[in-house]
Image 1 (cartoon, rainbow, N blue to C red):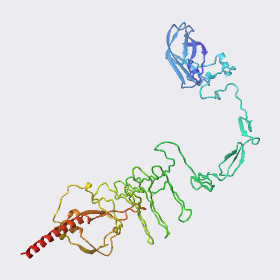
Image 2: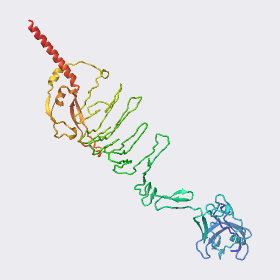
Image 3: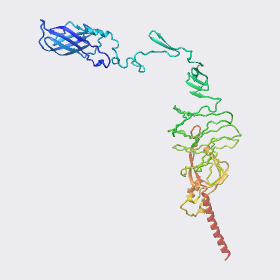
Image 4: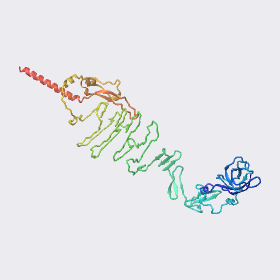
Length: 522
């Protein structure tokens, strides 16, 4: 068989873009299939295999298609494709018929005469439809046609090869000014800038100074002629409003300070911080997780060397008219599962003058109470105390114990008090400091009293199992001593027993007097 009259009807080159992707990517090919004698092959469908190569002798086809092709009077017509080739080099077509070897020679693909017009583009032929998105600048602020680059005042545009150099010419109304390295430039007129050491940027250390050219922190603000160096203000109305917040964002076992106020203008002068609030002047919370250190809501230290002035760890004053008739100078609340929970801790040191760990003062008149110090527990027990004092306890006013009938019930008289009192053995003794922690502060000299273990055998209800606390050190947070238990006597409730014993004794005396008188009258 032979192939004659080969005609390339159309060659289509595919472009990237939505519009061109809709054109069929095919080549139309026609030919005449004849026998060895040149006669047309009989009508019918012949299996043909079409291959494209990128060289006349190339061995591997870059595209191929095989299918039955109808032949009528030797003529066939076929659309080769779809083709996804760039058509930027010469290609050769090879045809095989009914599994026979490919016909020789390969057929080079050539252009249709009108395809040469693709070398040039008619003016105005390319519109937005031919330009794919993201490939060229298609608009500039909705401008079309000619877009001009026009220099403004004090600006020049200079072409240089493929570059446009845009520069400011200066002068004639341009920006001018002066300053030194590090100074932050500010406008001092509509057309000039300046800088001075009052606003300074340390670029090497990334520090900003306001009022100083030498900031030693990320932000340092100084003032020598202002009443207030800095003011932070907010009008946001919410219970969560925070005008200033200082956060330590690091980690580790360190006592980092979020806010520190220092005021030491002269010896004995200066206030480190001053707070005023309509509800609370200062709300302080100590928050900790699962650890062995103590947690303090407020830790205060007053130190100095003056022998003529008092040092107060906390000085609190409360005054004013309240419908509740209660004004508190200091309220300390502490809770948690720890070896010690301290609401208010007072500690003072000195030798030449009075030293007060906690000083409470109350004054006024009326029907309501005034309390210098008020201690409260949720319930009374051997290990829960409204007050605990290690050392002498002195008072100059009256000492009262709650005894109102409104608090009492189940009244019963009792007897045998004299017998119980006679069973007690008062002792004269000295306190020992051996194996006893110094925090107990036992008194010196000779003393008189009873032994709790002996009283417990006679009047067990007057003996309690007490607990000496482990007092925390406010600096380290560790206890300065070990807590331990001991026995104590309720001497106050021994008084009514003594009264009853006296009455019983007097009753015996009266009976004996009556018997003596009876004997005299016989």
